[in-house]
Image (tube, rainbow, N blue to C red):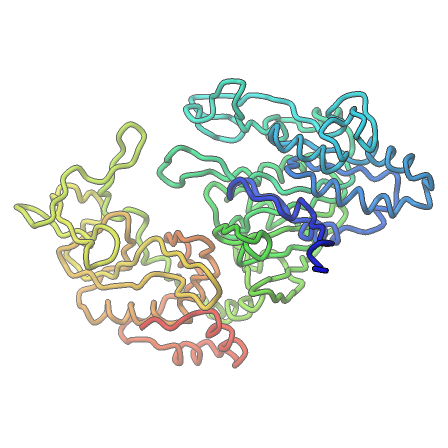
Amino acid sequence: MSNHINYNPDVLSCLANLSNDEVFTPPGLANQMLDMLPQELFQSPDTKFLDPCTKSGVFLREIAKRLIDGLADTIPDLQARIDHIMHHQLYGLAITQLTALMSRRSLYCSKDASGKYSISLFDDEDGNIKLDIIQHTWIQGKCRYCGVSQDVYDRSNNLESHAYEFIHTDNPNEIYHNMTFDVIIGNPPYQMSTAGSVESQAIPIYHKFVEQSIKLSPRYLCMITPARWLNGGFGLDNFRNKMLTDERISVIHDYMDSQECFPGVDISGGICYFLWSKEYHGDCQVYTHRGGEYNFVKRPLLEKGLNTFIRENEAVSILKKAWKDKTDSFESIVSPRDPFGLNYYENGREIMFKKIEDKPFENSIKIYYYGWLKDGLKYADKEYVTTYNHVVDKYKVMISKAYGERGAYPYFIIGKPFIAEPGTCCNMTYLVIGEYDNKRTAMNVVSYMKTKFFRFLVSIMKNTQNAYKKVYSLVPLQDFSKPWTDEELYKKYNLTDEEIQFIESMIRPME
């Protein structure tokens, strides 16, 4: 007889994710997060749990299992125990009508908590898993709470507006009438579309669930989110600063590859989950996961003198050596986005210069326009160059402002830099690195950028495909009267064999 006949998979581990924005949590991952909590919480009949963004109900279901075991001695009768747990210990806020039904089915074994199939009867069909349909609050075309566009999300009542109740209020305490929760845990929605904004096609919202949860002052907060907030992310500067200086974060698990948490889901920058403890103050136990393995170090989320999180535990010592002798940052010679001001705004959208030709014409300038160099040259009128005019007639180094890779290390990290001759400029596809009177100096800059040492330090700051000026901030500036090799840089910064081996394992050679 085949063993497959007795195979009974957990349905919640088989759910297909609706999108990369709202990702279902596998039961195994939910339990890894629950394992971070003090386990005595599951032995008390007074512990209250809230999932403010429940989707499949997996967190509430797995908590219920632990409470049923943990309270066996305190409440011996099984049905009385289940009733107590469901009515007085587990609470959820669904994010859509579909997830409300799924969550009730997972927790109560029925989508109707007042129906005959529910394992614990309630007076109404919702039980303790609520969904209140609310609307966005529009101010000048955007929601004052989540920032989405009114043009996109001002919908009829029979369509999902994604105005999540938990983050569309100034006082989340009012939702549960000032109830005190011991544990808040969940996997919030990650982002919402902005219908083609200049900076990004979507804005993050997961951090708003974290901020609202902290307002409720639970004993413990545990959430899983995209990891890009750790050292980047559109509109996340204030959130990152608050979190990285909050000594109540006692544990963080950082996954470089999101598919280690969510098989088949590719989230740029990876995934992390953390434990925030109201009574804890100190360094954080940082677990770095990569390729199915992990290491951990107890350290501050912010190293002294830095304003960003160092994701690689092994990178901390390398970075300290690179900046032991205070020097200027390579960032100082990197241009901002759209260095020559060739783009303009029309009806709220960013458009490149109006006239562009495949061949030179009178008063035209050569532009590195897009894509690979072989097909990325165009010509436009010099009058459209509104900034960086002094660089036009110099040698300069250019590099793509975006470069992404998938799969396992080692990576290139950045695209290949190239030398742009005098009389050229570029659109926002590229950044400009410095200005030079001769080609030799520019070649020396390129030699440095191609080293593994350089690109490793860039990787500390670069956690998405975008590689703006900021990602070069942790790279020390060098003397460019000479070319550079990794061997020279390893020696200059006195790196150990282990540190060199780590860099070599992370970064591919760039010919």
